[in-house]
Amino acid sequence: MSDSVRVRFAPSPTGPLHIGGVRTALYNYLFARKMGGKFLLRIEDTDQARFVPGAENYILESLAWLGISPDEGVGIGGPHEPYRQSERKDLYKAYADQLLADGKAYYAFDTSEELDAMRTSFESQGSAFQYNSLTRVKLKNSIALAPAEVDQLIASGTPYVIRLKVPAKGEVRFQDSIRDWVHVHTSSIDDKVLMKSDGMPTYHLANVVDDHIMEITHVIRGEEWLPSAPLHILLYQAFGWKAPQFAHLPLLLKPEGNGKLSKRDADLGGFPVFPMEWTDPATGAVSKGFKQEGYLKEATLNFLAFLGWNPGTEQEMFSLTELAEAFSLERINKAGAKFDVKKAQWFNEQYMKQQDTAALAANYLPNLPADQGVAFVQLFLDRITFPQELAVKVTEFQVRPAIYDEAVLASKWNADALSGLQLIAQALPTVESWEPEGIKHAIHEVLEANGIKMGKVMQILRVALSGNGAGPDLMISMQLWGKAEVIERLATALAKFPAL
Image 1: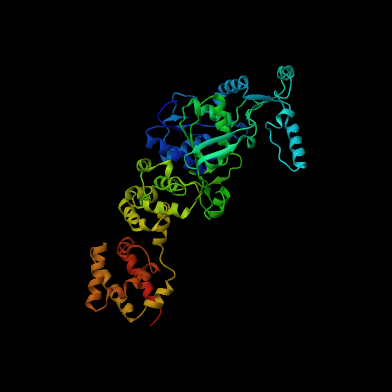
Image 2: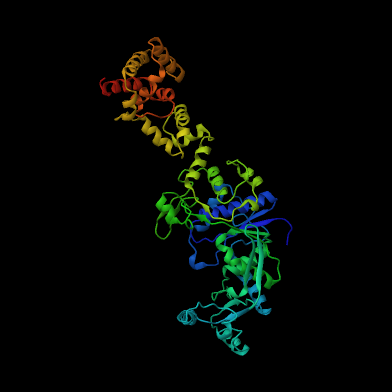
């Protein structure tokens, strides 16, 4: 095996890539970059019954959007092609045959009906059936049957699977980078199927064989695979291979922290759990995606990186390169990570402020003149979470107020405020340079000349023009409304405000 670090992300094309899978891909990518190694993308499609059209392309597009770029794999190529397991079928059969020849695996001819009957029998006695060293000697397999009978069954085309012969007595021990030492007695591990009756390998065999052939040094995957790790260790031992270093990532939990995050949680909470929008080819149902919901890739990457990992510093915003430099398996938590969508939104707000205003204006306010669009972006950039909110903000901004903030009127509307608005109404038509500084100077000058402090008037002026007691920079807002519109809005408000 190579001395250099080699990791892989190996999703199954059974539907849209869950955001937890994206985090797994990200951590593998970051570890490879940190260690100067290679990051592989392998598609594990041995379960043809669950294959979903379009899912593989969806995986590739999602990783490409986020900049999680494999060095080898599907869509890229490399020295271990093909990287799609369905195209490696013959290879797995040879390795299964090797285990059979070495007495580490055996043929099993039991039908599903026979196994169901066995399970029912065990359940009636208050126990769970397990195909293992105790039960295999009583079942229909090449351990219990005479060699001639086995040969006859195979020759006659009787369907069979190939099972791993798990040692009756023993202990599997391995050190996980996140969970430290794991100890499992072999009596709790059943004789898993390695090759199915259709000739396709199971996940367990294909996964181990491919990781060995592709020289994978570290297997970084979700906690849900931890129960399979002892079986995989046994397979490595059966082949006489060195096992990779395992690291099992913490679960992504519901926002409340009670249980694993699901699509249903996302639907109820109104947030995405997929990187990109997904249309179910069978039903046409559309699931939300981070990208289409307006999350920037930088925000998505930082949000995911912090779901179970921390850099040990106060820094919260990283480029992908900086994340790789800071990343380590040792700083991944064992405990599950709450999927706090508010934190995702916070990241998006921070990265929105760093976006090019001209590009945002061109993409999201295409119907406005370029300079006006940029001005609107600058006005609202601190007040939006997602870029598509810009168009909504502009539409709302351009609608004249129908109602006025009653709380502000109740506390601020007085004789000084009335006099101040009347003086401003008189001064505004004379403003020649209709830009923020010119407008502000004219307002300040007329109020000061009449002994009225700006603080007594400005919030009431905002309510008069926008209807709201708070909002973006008022002088820039007045510039964007335009001189005639501001004068008209102020006159309308003075006519509608309560009599003193």
